[in-house]
Amino acid sequence: MKRTGYKITKLTIAALCLTALLFSCAPARAESGADYTGDAALAKKLDEIFTGEAKLFSNTDQGYPLDSFIGSGRFYVDGDFYGSECWIYANAVYYYLFGEIPNKGKDSYRYSFTALKGCKKLDCATLAAAGVGTGTYLRTTDRKDAAYSSSAGHSLIVLGYDEDGLTWLDANWGTPKYYVHLHTKNWEYVNKYVMRSGYVVSHAVIPYRTASSGILCDGAGKEYLLGGMGITRVVTVPDGIVKIGEEAFEPTDGCAVIVPGSVTELEPGALGRAAVFAPENSAAQAYAQANGLKYYPLYDGWELLRAAN
Image (cartoon, rainbow, N blue to C red; front, side, top):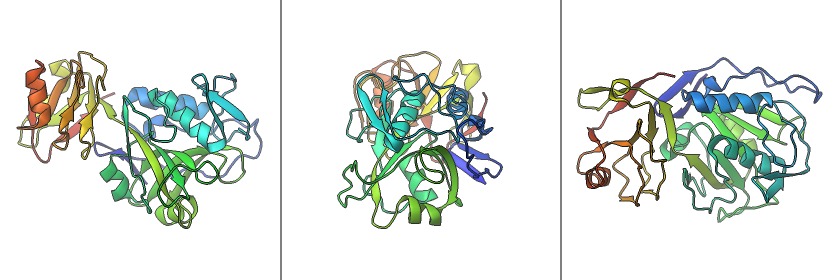
């Protein structure tokens, strides 16, 4: 089954075994983060979560690998932020991966943005259009206005998806209950049992995507050998985003940011010292030139041809 967490990352993985282990002392399922992302750093963090090496909660040193019992107790993340069951687990996973807490989707994020509020049906095209990538936090709700509900709804972490279905990570959903699970299900199942009758998306918190250096085709026949340009990391802002906040990306050399034409507002320090790839006559081009950043034009059909770890 093909999995894509983003337009430039499309990997094929073997079918996943969905049989839950019955005992909490059983070893964690062998699962690889590299099956879901070409970003080596993100894949490593996923591996640590899958095996339980990651310590997700500040009030316990216990790791919670795949198929382990997590229960319904209160857990803390990053100080005073706490909760239980699927809610706190998904928040803790996102915090471990990206350093931000999704909470109720109303926070002012530095490295993330929100989308899909009020969405009634999930499918591959909808997630791709919203920029959903590996690690996205998604919360459902029974509220018709898509407001967060603590009494009804579910929190999960998207790992991958394609035309056939969705793969996600969660806790305290499915059988046996109160366990950490990894699921792969078709869209009919997702919309019937995860979204449920009348449920909508409360919010999806999505990280700006990153990938290792590779070859970037500008859409007009020119190829940029990023490694030879000293670019070791590429950050891609999904199409549809209109604003990039202040200091959204750490001011680092060796980084490039691909900015779509939909972005019309960039706050001070939004792109750090990164090289900028963006359409001509775009807000990002003007920003790059005004701030002394290297600028390279992009055209329709641009593509990151290879991501080298």
